[in-house]
Length: 399
Ligand SMILES: CC(C)(COP(=O)(O)OP(=O)(O)OC[C@H]1O[C@@H](n2cnc3c(N)ncnc32)[C@H](O)[C@@H]1OP(=O)(O)O)[C@@H](O)C(=O)NCCC(=O)NCCS
Image 1 (tube, rainbow, N blue to C red):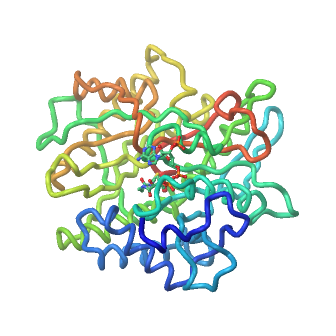
Image 2: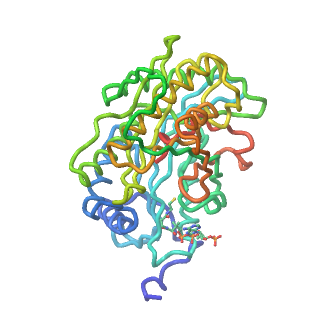
Image 3: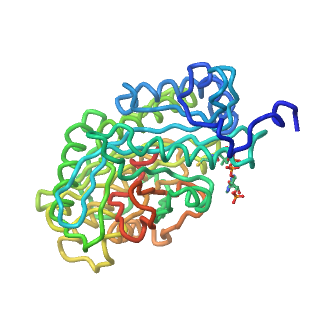
């Protein structure tokens, strides 16, 4: 062990605490974690991406905070970087049993990192404990307590659960890219652009609020949802554009697809492309959010977990066909961008049916290691998975 590492305080030291990174510390941390996370970008480009992502509608004006676990007795920029992470403010909805739907502030935690030389000493666990306490009242009106926070674990289901963030259902269905439409009945499917985001995300948000308002979860059960707003979608698109420009020299324009059903209702989705590595397999076209307009008026929506397995009614049948058209538009787009697959998180049984019609081998995959959606309820130490339904648990909420 190097001397400097040997002289660091242990993870249970009272000298340790969480504080915000200085600009210099932020750059040092990005250079360090960029070695693991830069993907197809150079470390310099990765630094540029992080700067760019910190300057979007979702993140600017203090909505993103860069945290550092350190020895608080030392001066900024001279103190050790024991571990680091970020928290991102999120607009969320909470519905408790027979109460109204409330919009409150929550946080997504991301970029949890510890220098390889310092791992296994308990620093990240200490940071998560401190962070939970920091976020307890952050950004809340009238000194109310933060109700819940979320994160997406890439290290399985144990580490964060030990620290209070419990794993939720984290499944997906994948479809291969296709170069030509198959022979299915053509439904008119129109591409969606950035200019469509405001109106459709606004509609989605109001439908989500309405469906939660009408829902009657059993006594003791609460529903929560991250609001699928324009700022959230645009943040994904900003990431996608930044990387696409650097690795391919062009940026995508088509952000999703929309179908109008015979009854006038619409089915749409927004997506974003992930450029993993140089092989096609590493590139994924992720469906960020899939919306069935009629669903919100007919039934409590849209948690994939909450929608029971149904054999399709006539109306459902039309929606399955609409979803097929949407998913096929995604497959065609995926082929154009050399993506290895289209992926939809936590698909409802109807979406799964639509996927199987396009590709009979498609099935539900339950992730065990990466992107495990995890939630901590800050008011209560009991297991949130027992009594909190995470509605609309789709890719858009990832951070
Ligand atoms: C994950 C990470 C932050 C842990 O930091 P750390 O300071 O070593 O963590 P701690 O010493 O507090 O805790 C270590 C625990 O984390 C677990 N852990 C660490 N890396 C892990 C991994 N890749 N998969 C599963 N568990 C892991 C250890 O098994 C250990 O568990 P234990 O307490 O039951 O023994 C660090 O390994 C890291 O930066 N990894 C690379 C970046 C990353 O994957 N971040 C997580 C993104 S969701």
